[in-house]
Length: 192
Image (cartoon, rainbow, N blue to C red; front, side, top):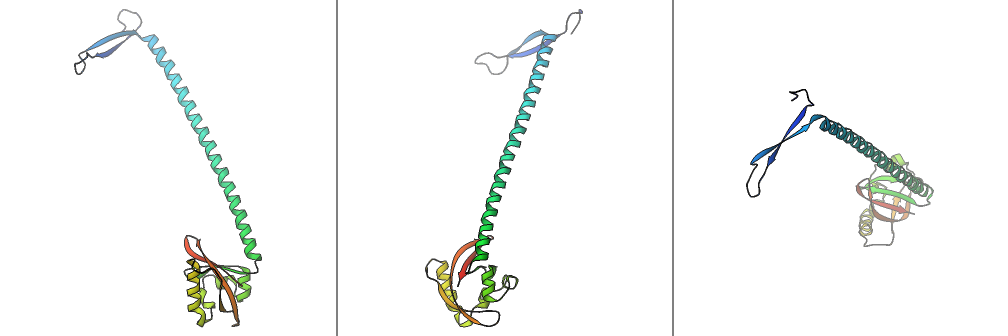
């Protein structure tokens, strides 16, 4: 308190501990003039605000830099994927071999050569049962051969009769491999 007109003071109590005795056994009173302590507190406050501000600023810059790296990596991967997809599409579209993907016995994908050979459009084939194009007497053999090939027990292509849209019967030679297609087990096939 300022009782005699002098500068105000701060009274600080510090607990006193003695070795071997539990808990504080008294207090030490310290008196300090208020002005130097206030100046020190204000100086510390400005340093803390400065350090905190710099810390937030640095964190923000690191976050922005990290996000830009992630974004660049995403864009590069997307461009690579698009190039691969374009290459696969070009190969599929220009192939002289019929290419198809079957999942759950249903056509999921067919290439233009497959459409040409069967006489059906892509829209007519995708969603259709794959065995609906097979000559009925060949269905048991095609199932057996395809399963063996998918399991790796057969490596040579197998033959069967295919019925096109006009009812014409054609002999084809086919091979299949297991793939993942949209998260499902599927078969990628090709035939001539």
